Length: 482
Image (tube, rainbow, N blue to C red; front, side, top):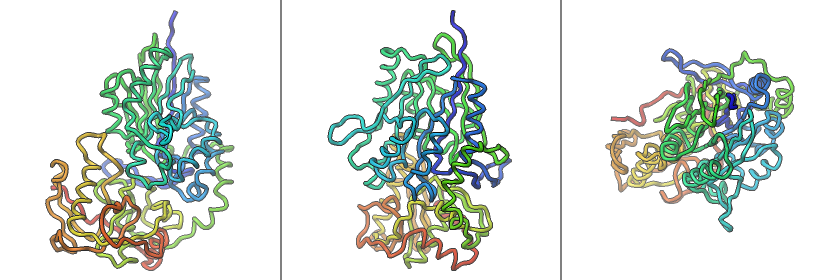
């Protein structure tokens, strides 16, 4: 006789190394509000409560972007998080920025974790064999559950070359369908969960054209979904970023079917009591960094954040510092999604590292007006492509020293209507000196006389803030949708 089975799925996605309480921005009643949230210690409290209420019925999954984003995590190449993550009893993860130290270091990290990294779409260049475990089968709540991992496929296309040394990435769509069929037909699983770092628009398309997925845990695009999206009999959730929220999905199953579900997007508020043991692990790991990171270097009169598509106050400040140190006419950086907000007030060393933890060299390059136009059209397509599978990257490229007017609905290559640099119309034959950070700011195929300055981004930004005393960084309307 069959009976209902209750499974609790806990989701963390896009933690970006935010191991403890930090400022976050929340949109409430049409206004931006800032308060502290997050931290693995508080997440551990909620995980323990869920396991106490549903013993052997909890599945905890991490969508990746775990081992990168804050200074202690980057400085240790992810090592400081190992005891923290192991204590959380996570069941599996997938990846994106986790390749920041190269595939070899990621495999080293995974060898120390008590759970696998799943990716059905990463292959060894020499053998064409899977480079990581594609899927696992687990038992929870007396259910046989297949979990398929799909990593962010742009790693070998848009990220620095060392991220993908010796491996290559496919889109992963065909692999997901093949494995789902195998899990249903050969392994006779009760439930199929896809653990994805594909991105919400991409995951919606994946669910639309793939049969047999019951639950899809989405990552990469930092959507804080307050309720699941149902596509083609698939429930999709995504739970923000930086650990400011976790997702909880409770499902009731009977006769191999989901008969009911409930969902919570749970804010990891400061009021949640951290788990003492895990918080102690965090405090010990961070102690060597704490004094230097808490040093105040200046002040901001503007709330700084990255949570906007066209431009952001945080990145306008970063670009101001690039122009200041380089003497360039225009500046570009990648449209990174990660990086905690900095409310108006003191700015610390830690805040600066959170803005640009990769700490690349400040670079300059001469670009023709035509190259600027082509680069920005390419970036618009990578961001707003009609086909979600062609969307590659984060927010729109950050720009300063120019204004651009865009018809966002136009076809690829025909979106930009006008560009002005220093208030003067762009001359396609003229060369302009551009400052930038990373090849995501200005890809290698653009420009001439490219060189790195003798200063890195963190120092340039720190020096600019110290020199200014109090900085301001408003939205300037650099990119106008018309």
